[in-house]
Image 1 (cartoon, rainbow, N blue to C red):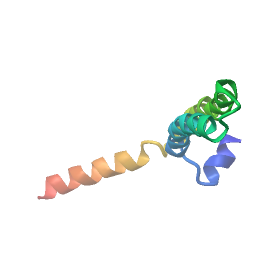
Image 2: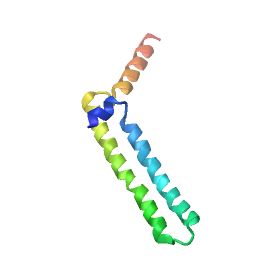
Image 3: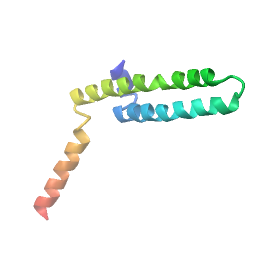
Image 4: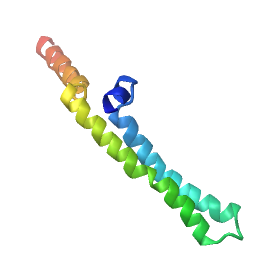
Length: 94
């Protein structure tokens, strides 16, 4: 499944970004529920916040799995390594 997601273009940084976003979205959802449903109370808002907040660990786990796959494949550090080599070559010829 991880290979399929990677082949579709999903990278670890995408999953990490989505996880961080879901944490903010959890707080936003909790706050919006308090304001939009005034008679429902804190319990209902907490349920909404927790529901969205549960996405973050899943997305962080997906990011870790993708990161591990990218390390094995060599694409995680491939760009950084290529950029470093290019800079060293330019420094040597300059």
